[in-house]
Amino acid sequence: MIDIKKLEIEPYADGYEGFWFPGSTVQYPTAELEIVCWDSTLTLLLSKDRTIVEDFKEYFKDARDLDEYILED
Image (tube, rainbow, N blue to C red; front, side, top):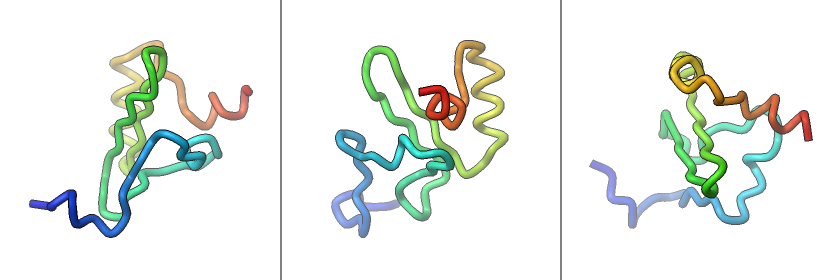
């Protein structure tokens, strides 16, 4: 079990600009998945396993690819 108080890199959401560039990925090097509750309108799901992302998008039909969302702005 990982002691989150002893992480070498501390993932964060508020002010993290790395989400808003194409190709963004999980912040912690050994993490496989990152879920960020951004606000009441946006939840980010990042995963090193593309299958997880595709399954999520299949289940939640309104979900959009983050890279596409970024490039639309």
